[in-house]
Image 1: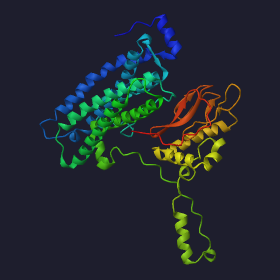
Image 2: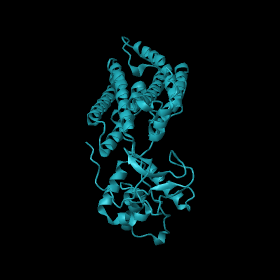
Image 3: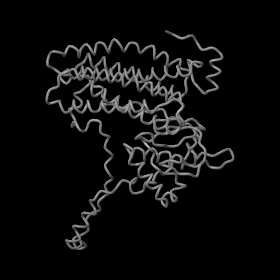
Image 4: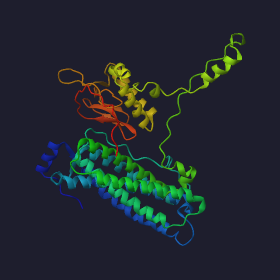
Length: 425
């Protein structure tokens, strides 16, 4: 049902709160009703396997792919719908508007729904269809903002509850099927992953209370995002279990491997007359072929604010905090590239970026947590990673979960450095 347009007072309240219109997103929400008949068809195809002695692994590959694409569309639509519904429930006086972080996140989800629905239809009709994507895929990137509005956290928790409920329904159906011995180890691993998501979901539900402190708010937000990513991935494996047999069962759910360490270039061998004795040749060959540690291991301050790197080198607490930061990242090489991109743009005489300053011209400085990146201000419209910045936007780079993200906002200068690891219950 289409809502009447918001009245003048609603528009004024939304403007004062910095909220933006959800009119286009509401249209996406209404369009999502087409997913449900397709879900019923997919469930019917799997129901036909019952009593035949065949499992989901035995379903034709293209039908499994169609179910996976449908799962992705359904979860993305559900997450986006829930974000909007939860915000409307939390702020009934600005229905039709929502915080920008919520609308940006919902838009990122909705933007992919139609693509996955199209892939599902093509896979169902064409046994040779190839979507040309590496499966399973990850959720769209989270909308970076600092601090995150409290109503957005409430929406995230509501979305998590609904996503976990759908995963539970899939798992119940999965457990009702026979599993051949060849697939037993993978089936056991999938059940274990589901139990882990169920436990984490209950834990977060118990931890969350409206009006939580900023520190607890951030902790729950990070863990909720990580858990929703796990649910999304696990649902894809359950939808298309043939994917699991390409890797050992123990590898399912494992973090992505870190990039291989850089290998030093081996210099050409010297002339025979200049070569050392045989005993020395052996040690020299070992030294030349031994892999070097990555830059972020040797110099954990390599991507920190250049203005404080000397200070960081002399501070053992900060050095240890930086080492923990790099170890916590799933792709430290990508994080280093992102940090260096911002640093390079700022160094080019402020063409794209400059160090942020206060009204009196004093530098704002750097973030107080690893990687202690500078706080920048966009001079021109530009893109850092996947975030598009407008002139005047301030941002820094912070770890959120196992990823480095561009975080926008207004920042205050601080001489302090956070060097203690964050507590994670």
